[in-house]
Image 1: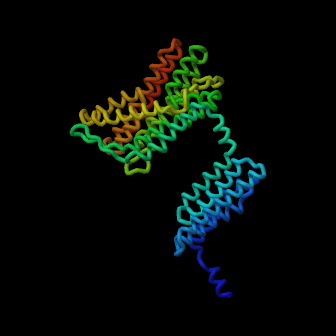
Image 2: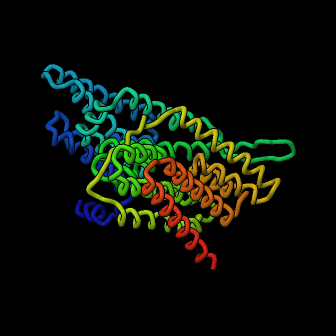
Image 3: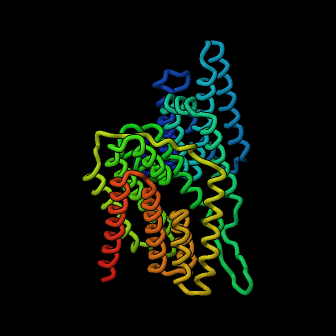
Length: 430
Protein backbone atom coordinates (compact mmCIF):
# COMPACT_ATOMS: atom_id res chain seq x y z
CA UNK A 1 0.00 0.00 0.00
CA UNK A 2 2.79 2.39 0.90
CA UNK A 3 4.55 1.58 -2.38
CA UNK A 4 1.40 2.41 -4.37
CA UNK A 5 0.99 5.71 -2.52
CA UNK A 6 4.62 6.59 -3.27
CA UNK A 7 4.10 5.88 -6.98
CA UNK A 8 1.03 8.11 -7.06
CA UNK A 9 2.87 10.90 -5.29
CA UNK A 10 5.77 10.75 -7.75
CA UNK A 11 3.55 10.52 -10.84
CA UNK A 12 3.83 13.57 -13.12
CA UNK A 13 0.87 15.88 -13.53
CA UNK A 14 -0.27 14.83 -17.01
CA UNK A 15 -2.40 16.84 -19.44
CA UNK A 16 -5.59 15.01 -18.54
CA UNK A 17 -5.30 16.00 -14.88
CA UNK A 18 -4.61 19.60 -15.88
CA UNK A 19 -7.73 19.70 -18.04
CA UNK A 20 -9.83 18.27 -15.22
CA UNK A 21 -8.50 20.89 -12.79
CA UNK A 22 -9.09 23.69 -15.31
CA UNK A 23 -12.66 22.49 -15.93
CA UNK A 24 -13.37 22.59 -12.20
CA UNK A 25 -11.78 26.04 -11.86
CA UNK A 26 -13.82 27.48 -14.73
CA UNK A 27 -16.97 26.02 -13.20
CA UNK A 28 -16.14 27.77 -9.93
CA UNK A 29 -15.55 30.98 -11.87
CA UNK A 30 -18.96 30.71 -13.54
CA UNK A 31 -20.69 29.95 -10.24
CA UNK A 32 -19.05 32.85 -8.42
CA UNK A 33 -21.59 35.43 -9.62
CA UNK A 34 -24.52 33.08 -8.92
CA UNK A 35 -23.18 32.51 -5.40
CA UNK A 36 -22.74 36.25 -4.88
CA UNK A 37 -26.32 36.79 -6.10
CA UNK A 38 -27.47 34.17 -3.55
CA UNK A 39 -29.03 31.85 -6.11
CA UNK A 40 -29.97 28.23 -5.48
CA UNK A 41 -26.95 26.99 -7.49
CA UNK A 42 -23.55 28.47 -6.68
CA UNK A 43 -19.83 27.80 -6.76
CA UNK A 44 -19.92 24.14 -5.72
CA UNK A 45 -22.79 23.17 -8.03
CA UNK A 46 -21.27 24.85 -11.08
CA UNK A 47 -17.82 23.39 -10.39
CA UNK A 48 -19.25 19.88 -10.02
CA UNK A 49 -21.24 20.28 -13.25
CA UNK A 50 -18.08 21.26 -15.18
CA UNK A 51 -16.16 18.39 -13.62
CA UNK A 52 -18.95 15.97 -14.54
CA UNK A 53 -18.83 17.13 -18.16
CA UNK A 54 -15.04 16.80 -18.20
CA UNK A 55 -15.15 13.27 -16.78
CA UNK A 56 -17.84 12.14 -19.23
CA UNK A 57 -15.96 13.70 -22.16
CA UNK A 58 -12.71 11.97 -21.21
CA UNK A 59 -14.49 8.64 -20.91
CA UNK A 60 -16.02 9.10 -24.35
CA UNK A 61 -12.73 10.13 -25.96
CA UNK A 62 -10.33 7.72 -24.24
CA UNK A 63 -12.40 4.58 -23.67
CA UNK A 64 -15.04 2.48 -25.34
CA UNK A 65 -17.89 4.33 -23.65
CA UNK A 66 -20.34 5.65 -26.19
CA UNK A 67 -21.30 9.30 -26.75
CA UNK A 68 -24.64 8.58 -25.13
CA UNK A 69 -22.98 9.07 -21.72
CA UNK A 70 -22.17 12.67 -22.57
CA UNK A 71 -25.70 13.24 -23.87
CA UNK A 72 -27.12 11.69 -20.70
CA UNK A 73 -25.07 14.08 -18.58
CA UNK A 74 -26.41 17.02 -20.55
CA UNK A 75 -29.98 15.81 -20.08
CA UNK A 76 -29.40 15.50 -16.33
CA UNK A 77 -28.17 19.09 -16.18
CA UNK A 78 -31.21 20.24 -18.16
CA UNK A 79 -33.56 18.37 -15.80
CA UNK A 80 -31.80 19.88 -12.80
CA UNK A 81 -32.10 23.33 -14.33
CA UNK A 82 -35.82 22.84 -14.98
CA UNK A 83 -36.35 21.74 -11.36
CA UNK A 84 -34.51 24.85 -10.12
CA UNK A 85 -36.61 27.05 -12.40
CA UNK A 86 -39.81 25.47 -11.06
CA UNK A 87 -38.55 25.91 -7.52
CA UNK A 88 -37.85 29.58 -8.25
CA UNK A 89 -41.38 30.05 -9.53
CA UNK A 90 -42.87 28.39 -6.45
CA UNK A 91 -40.76 30.64 -4.23
CA UNK A 92 -41.91 33.69 -6.24
CA UNK A 93 -38.43 34.29 -7.61
CA UNK A 94 -38.23 36.29 -10.83
CA UNK A 95 -38.65 33.95 -13.81
CA UNK A 96 -35.80 35.51 -15.75
CA UNK A 97 -33.36 35.03 -12.88
CA UNK A 98 -34.24 31.35 -12.39
CA UNK A 99 -34.00 30.69 -16.12
CA UNK A 100 -30.62 32.45 -16.22
CA UNK A 101 -29.29 30.14 -13.52
CA UNK A 102 -30.59 27.08 -15.37
CA UNK A 103 -29.02 28.12 -18.66
CA UNK A 104 -25.76 29.03 -16.87
CA UNK A 105 -25.58 25.48 -15.52
CA UNK A 106 -25.84 24.10 -19.05
CA UNK A 107 -23.10 26.52 -20.15
CA UNK A 108 -20.90 25.24 -17.30
CA UNK A 109 -21.47 21.70 -18.58
CA UNK A 110 -20.44 22.80 -22.07
CA UNK A 111 -17.31 24.52 -20.74
CA UNK A 112 -16.24 21.36 -18.97
CA UNK A 113 -16.75 19.32 -22.13
CA UNK A 114 -14.78 21.82 -24.25
CA UNK A 115 -11.82 21.87 -21.89
CA UNK A 116 -11.70 18.09 -21.56
CA UNK A 117 -11.82 17.72 -25.35
CA UNK A 118 -8.75 19.95 -25.68
CA UNK A 119 -10.50 23.17 -26.73
CA UNK A 120 -8.85 25.14 -23.93
CA UNK A 121 -9.02 28.64 -25.44
CA UNK A 122 -12.60 28.14 -26.54
CA UNK A 123 -13.67 26.89 -23.10
CA UNK A 124 -11.99 29.79 -21.30
CA UNK A 125 -13.54 32.27 -23.75
CA UNK A 126 -17.05 30.88 -23.19
CA UNK A 127 -16.57 30.97 -19.41
CA UNK A 128 -15.28 34.54 -19.37
CA UNK A 129 -17.96 35.88 -21.72
CA UNK A 130 -20.72 34.08 -19.81
CA UNK A 131 -19.48 35.45 -16.49
CA UNK A 132 -19.32 38.93 -18.00
CA UNK A 133 -22.93 38.65 -19.16
CA UNK A 134 -24.00 37.64 -15.65
CA UNK A 135 -22.09 40.46 -13.96
CA UNK A 136 -23.34 43.14 -16.39
CA UNK A 137 -26.98 42.17 -15.90
CA UNK A 138 -28.16 45.60 -14.75
CA UNK A 139 -26.16 47.53 -17.35
CA UNK A 140 -27.38 45.31 -20.18
CA UNK A 141 -31.00 45.66 -19.06
CA UNK A 142 -30.72 49.44 -18.84
CA UNK A 143 -29.08 49.56 -22.26
CA UNK A 144 -31.77 47.41 -23.87
CA UNK A 145 -34.65 49.28 -22.22
CA UNK A 146 -33.16 52.61 -23.30
CA UNK A 147 -33.00 51.75 -27.01
CA UNK A 148 -35.38 53.57 -29.29
CA UNK A 149 -37.27 51.77 -32.05
CA UNK A 150 -34.91 53.18 -34.69
CA UNK A 151 -31.84 52.11 -32.73
CA UNK A 152 -33.22 48.61 -32.22
CA UNK A 153 -34.02 48.28 -35.89
CA UNK A 154 -30.55 49.50 -36.87
CA UNK A 155 -28.89 47.05 -34.49
CA UNK A 156 -30.89 44.15 -35.92
CA UNK A 157 -30.00 45.11 -39.48
CA UNK A 158 -26.34 45.33 -38.54
CA UNK A 159 -26.46 41.88 -36.93
CA UNK A 160 -27.94 40.44 -40.14
CA UNK A 161 -25.20 41.97 -42.26
CA UNK A 162 -22.42 40.90 -39.90
CA UNK A 163 -23.54 37.46 -38.78
CA UNK A 164 -25.84 36.22 -41.54
CA UNK A 165 -24.61 37.60 -44.86
CA UNK A 166 -20.87 37.52 -44.13
CA UNK A 167 -20.62 33.72 -43.61
CA UNK A 168 -22.58 33.10 -46.81
CA UNK A 169 -20.16 35.03 -49.03
CA UNK A 170 -17.40 33.15 -50.89
CA UNK A 171 -13.82 33.78 -49.84
CA UNK A 172 -12.74 34.53 -53.41
CA UNK A 173 -14.49 35.31 -56.69
CA UNK A 174 -13.17 36.06 -60.15
CA UNK A 175 -14.83 38.79 -62.19
CA UNK A 176 -14.11 38.90 -65.90
CA UNK A 177 -14.51 42.12 -67.87
CA UNK A 178 -13.62 41.37 -71.46
CA UNK A 179 -10.15 39.87 -71.46
CA UNK A 180 -9.43 41.15 -67.97
CA UNK A 181 -9.80 38.99 -64.87
CA UNK A 182 -10.23 40.65 -61.46
CA UNK A 183 -9.74 38.53 -58.36
CA UNK A 184 -12.02 39.84 -55.60
CA UNK A 185 -12.31 38.74 -51.96
CA UNK A 186 -16.02 39.13 -51.13
CA UNK A 187 -15.61 38.13 -47.48
CA UNK A 188 -12.76 40.56 -46.90
CA UNK A 189 -14.65 43.31 -48.72
CA UNK A 190 -17.77 42.72 -46.65
CA UNK A 191 -15.76 42.45 -43.44
CA UNK A 192 -14.32 45.90 -44.09
CA UNK A 193 -17.80 47.27 -44.75
CA UNK A 194 -19.01 45.74 -41.47
CA UNK A 195 -15.96 47.11 -39.64
CA UNK A 196 -16.60 50.68 -40.80
CA UNK A 197 -20.30 50.36 -39.93
CA UNK A 198 -19.38 48.87 -36.55
CA UNK A 199 -17.17 51.86 -35.79
CA UNK A 200 -20.14 54.07 -36.54
CA UNK A 201 -22.40 52.11 -34.15
CA UNK A 202 -19.92 52.15 -31.27
CA UNK A 203 -19.25 55.83 -31.63
CA UNK A 204 -22.92 56.65 -32.03
CA UNK A 205 -23.37 55.23 -28.54
CA UNK A 206 -20.41 57.24 -27.23
CA UNK A 207 -21.60 60.47 -28.82
CA UNK A 208 -25.17 59.90 -27.60
CA UNK A 209 -23.93 59.30 -24.04
CA UNK A 210 -21.12 61.84 -23.70
CA UNK A 211 -21.84 64.26 -26.55
CA UNK A 212 -22.54 67.25 -24.33
CA UNK A 213 -19.52 66.79 -22.08
CA UNK A 214 -16.71 67.97 -24.31
CA UNK A 215 -15.52 68.86 -27.74
CA UNK A 216 -13.03 65.98 -27.75
CA UNK A 217 -15.89 63.49 -27.64
CA UNK A 218 -18.23 65.28 -30.03
CA UNK A 219 -15.52 66.11 -32.56
CA UNK A 220 -13.30 63.05 -32.56
CA UNK A 221 -15.83 60.29 -31.92
CA UNK A 222 -18.49 62.05 -33.95
CA UNK A 223 -15.97 62.21 -36.78
CA UNK A 224 -15.48 58.45 -36.59
CA UNK A 225 -19.22 57.96 -36.96
CA UNK A 226 -19.87 60.71 -39.52
CA UNK A 227 -17.48 63.55 -40.22
CA UNK A 228 -20.14 65.23 -42.37
CA UNK A 229 -22.46 65.32 -39.35
CA UNK A 230 -19.74 67.09 -37.37
CA UNK A 231 -19.24 69.74 -40.06
CA UNK A 232 -22.97 70.21 -40.54
CA UNK A 233 -23.60 70.57 -36.82
CA UNK A 234 -20.72 73.04 -36.42
CA UNK A 235 -21.98 75.14 -39.34
CA UNK A 236 -25.42 75.40 -37.77
CA UNK A 237 -23.95 76.13 -34.33
CA UNK A 238 -21.69 78.90 -35.61
CA UNK A 239 -24.64 80.43 -37.45
CA UNK A 240 -26.63 80.56 -34.23
CA UNK A 241 -23.69 81.48 -31.95
CA UNK A 242 -20.80 83.20 -33.77
CA UNK A 243 -18.77 83.27 -30.54
CA UNK A 244 -18.58 79.46 -30.68
CA UNK A 245 -16.31 79.50 -33.75
CA UNK A 246 -13.16 78.50 -31.83
CA UNK A 247 -14.45 75.16 -30.61
CA UNK A 248 -16.32 74.56 -33.87
CA UNK A 249 -13.00 74.79 -35.70
CA UNK A 250 -11.48 72.39 -33.16
CA UNK A 251 -14.36 69.95 -33.69
CA UNK A 252 -13.73 69.83 -37.44
CA UNK A 253 -10.00 69.38 -36.89
CA UNK A 254 -10.68 66.50 -34.51
CA UNK A 255 -13.08 65.01 -37.05
CA UNK A 256 -10.18 65.05 -39.51
CA UNK A 257 -8.02 63.36 -36.90
CA UNK A 258 -10.69 60.69 -36.43
CA UNK A 259 -10.94 60.16 -40.17
CA UNK A 260 -7.17 59.77 -40.46
CA UNK A 261 -7.12 57.41 -37.45
CA UNK A 262 -9.85 55.29 -39.02
CA UNK A 263 -7.97 55.06 -42.31
CA UNK A 264 -4.77 54.18 -40.47
CA UNK A 265 -6.60 51.47 -38.52
CA UNK A 266 -7.92 49.97 -41.77
CA UNK A 267 -4.53 50.17 -43.49
CA UNK A 268 -2.64 48.52 -40.64
CA UNK A 269 -5.34 46.32 -39.10
CA UNK A 270 -6.27 44.50 -42.30
CA UNK A 271 -2.65 43.81 -43.26
CA UNK A 272 -1.54 42.41 -39.90
CA UNK A 273 -1.14 38.68 -39.58
CA UNK A 274 -1.30 37.88 -43.28
CA UNK A 275 1.22 36.77 -45.88
CA UNK A 276 1.92 40.38 -46.85
CA UNK A 277 3.91 43.10 -45.12
CA UNK A 278 2.08 45.58 -42.91
CA UNK A 279 1.52 48.99 -44.51
CA UNK A 280 3.90 50.76 -42.13
CA UNK A 281 4.46 53.47 -44.77
CA UNK A 282 1.06 54.95 -43.90
CA UNK A 283 1.80 55.31 -40.18
CA UNK A 284 4.05 58.40 -40.30
CA UNK A 285 2.02 60.70 -42.64
CA UNK A 286 -1.36 59.77 -41.19
CA UNK A 287 0.10 59.93 -37.69
CA UNK A 288 1.37 63.44 -38.44
CA UNK A 289 -2.12 64.52 -39.51
CA UNK A 290 -3.61 63.08 -36.30
CA UNK A 291 -1.03 64.72 -34.01
CA UNK A 292 -1.23 68.09 -35.76
CA UNK A 293 -5.03 68.08 -35.59
CA UNK A 294 -4.96 67.40 -31.85
CA UNK A 295 -2.25 70.02 -31.26
CA UNK A 296 -4.07 72.76 -33.19
CA UNK A 297 -7.40 71.88 -31.57
CA UNK A 298 -5.85 72.03 -28.11
CA UNK A 299 -4.33 75.44 -28.91
CA UNK A 300 -7.32 77.12 -30.56
CA UNK A 301 -10.40 75.73 -28.80
CA UNK A 302 -12.33 77.28 -25.96
CA UNK A 303 -12.67 74.13 -23.86
CA UNK A 304 -15.38 75.62 -21.67
CA UNK A 305 -17.79 75.17 -24.57
CA UNK A 306 -19.36 71.93 -25.76
CA UNK A 307 -22.17 70.75 -27.98
CA UNK A 308 -23.86 67.43 -28.76
CA UNK A 309 -23.80 65.82 -32.18
CA UNK A 310 -27.25 64.75 -33.34
CA UNK A 311 -26.75 61.68 -35.53
CA UNK A 312 -29.83 60.36 -37.27
CA UNK A 313 -29.34 56.69 -36.40
CA UNK A 314 -26.54 54.35 -35.30
CA UNK A 315 -26.73 52.28 -38.45
CA UNK A 316 -28.64 52.40 -41.71
CA UNK A 317 -29.03 49.51 -44.13
CA UNK A 318 -29.27 52.00 -46.98
CA UNK A 319 -26.05 53.70 -45.96
CA UNK A 320 -24.25 50.37 -45.58
CA UNK A 321 -25.30 49.17 -49.02
CA UNK A 322 -24.38 52.57 -50.42
CA UNK A 323 -20.92 52.31 -48.89
CA UNK A 324 -20.56 48.81 -50.24
CA UNK A 325 -21.57 49.96 -53.71
CA UNK A 326 -19.12 52.88 -53.65
CA UNK A 327 -16.39 50.60 -52.34
CA UNK A 328 -17.02 47.97 -55.02
CA UNK A 329 -17.12 50.55 -57.82
CA UNK A 330 -13.91 52.13 -56.59
CA UNK A 331 -12.29 48.70 -56.42
CA UNK A 332 -13.38 47.64 -59.92
CA UNK A 333 -12.76 50.94 -61.69
CA UNK A 334 -9.54 51.44 -59.77
CA UNK A 335 -8.30 48.06 -60.98
CA UNK A 336 -9.39 48.86 -64.54
CA UNK A 337 -7.82 52.31 -64.41
CA UNK A 338 -4.58 50.80 -63.15
CA UNK A 339 -4.65 48.23 -65.96
CA UNK A 340 -5.42 50.77 -68.65
CA UNK A 341 -3.49 53.81 -67.46
CA UNK A 342 -1.11 52.39 -64.89
CA UNK A 343 -0.87 53.49 -61.30
CA UNK A 344 -1.83 57.09 -62.15
CA UNK A 345 -5.33 55.92 -63.07
CA UNK A 346 -5.87 54.34 -59.66
CA UNK A 347 -4.54 57.46 -57.92
CA UNK A 348 -7.13 59.58 -59.74
CA UNK A 349 -9.84 57.14 -58.68
CA UNK A 350 -8.66 57.34 -55.06
CA UNK A 351 -8.88 61.14 -55.09
CA UNK A 352 -12.38 61.09 -56.58
CA UNK A 353 -13.64 58.44 -54.16
CA UNK A 354 -12.15 60.30 -51.21
CA UNK A 355 -14.67 63.07 -51.82
CA UNK A 356 -17.41 60.52 -51.14
CA UNK A 357 -15.79 58.15 -48.63
CA UNK A 358 -12.11 58.07 -47.69
CA UNK A 359 -12.78 54.78 -45.90
CA UNK A 360 -14.01 53.25 -49.15
CA UNK A 361 -10.88 54.35 -51.03
CA UNK A 362 -8.68 53.12 -48.18
CA UNK A 363 -10.30 49.70 -48.07
CA UNK A 364 -10.05 49.44 -51.86
CA UNK A 365 -6.32 50.16 -51.72
CA UNK A 366 -5.85 47.61 -48.94
CA UNK A 367 -7.73 44.88 -50.84
CA UNK A 368 -5.69 45.51 -53.99
CA UNK A 369 -2.52 45.46 -51.89
CA UNK A 370 -3.57 42.17 -50.30
CA UNK A 371 -4.15 40.63 -53.73
CA UNK A 372 -0.76 41.83 -55.02
CA UNK A 373 -2.22 44.28 -57.55
CA UNK A 374 -0.60 47.22 -55.73
CA UNK A 375 2.73 47.54 -54.01
CA UNK A 376 3.10 49.06 -50.54
CA UNK A 377 4.16 52.46 -51.89
CA UNK A 378 1.27 52.67 -54.36
CA UNK A 379 -1.30 51.57 -51.77
CA UNK A 380 0.01 54.11 -49.26
CA UNK A 381 -0.11 56.95 -51.80
CA UNK A 382 -3.71 56.04 -52.68
CA UNK A 383 -4.70 56.08 -48.99
CA UNK A 384 -3.02 59.45 -48.48
CA UNK A 385 -4.72 60.93 -51.56
CA UNK A 386 -8.13 59.78 -50.28
CA UNK A 387 -7.35 61.29 -46.87
CA UNK A 388 -6.31 64.57 -48.47
CA UNK A 389 -9.47 64.79 -50.55
CA UNK A 390 -11.59 64.15 -47.44
CA UNK A 391 -9.89 67.02 -45.60
CA UNK A 392 -10.45 69.28 -48.60
CA UNK A 393 -14.15 68.36 -48.69
CA UNK A 394 -14.58 69.43 -45.06
CA UNK A 395 -12.85 72.73 -45.79
CA UNK A 396 -15.12 73.28 -48.78
CA UNK A 397 -18.21 72.58 -46.67
CA UNK A 398 -16.98 74.98 -44.00
CA UNK A 399 -16.44 77.66 -46.64
CA UNK A 400 -20.21 77.90 -47.08
CA UNK A 401 -20.45 79.51 -43.63
CA UNK A 402 -21.27 83.21 -43.46
CA UNK A 403 -18.79 83.55 -40.57
CA UNK A 404 -15.63 84.73 -42.30
CA UNK A 405 -13.33 84.01 -39.37
CA UNK A 406 -14.66 80.48 -39.00
CA UNK A 407 -14.24 79.51 -42.65
CA UNK A 408 -10.80 81.11 -42.87
CA UNK A 409 -9.59 79.23 -39.80
CA UNK A 410 -10.86 75.92 -41.10
CA UNK A 411 -9.19 76.52 -44.47
CA UNK A 412 -5.92 77.63 -42.87
CA UNK A 413 -5.66 74.80 -40.35
CA UNK A 414 -6.68 72.25 -42.97
CA UNK A 415 -3.75 73.50 -45.05
CA UNK A 416 -1.52 73.01 -42.00
CA UNK A 417 -2.66 69.40 -41.70
CA UNK A 418 -2.00 68.77 -45.38
CA UNK A 419 1.41 70.43 -45.22
CA UNK A 420 2.38 68.46 -42.12
CA UNK A 421 1.39 65.16 -43.70
CA UNK A 422 3.30 66.05 -46.88
CA UNK A 423 6.47 66.98 -44.99
CA UNK A 424 6.27 63.77 -42.96
CA UNK A 425 5.99 61.77 -46.20
CA UNK A 426 8.96 63.58 -47.72
CA UNK A 427 11.08 62.92 -44.64
CA UNK A 428 10.38 59.20 -44.95
CA UNK A 429 11.24 59.19 -48.66
CA UNK A 430 14.45 61.17 -48.12
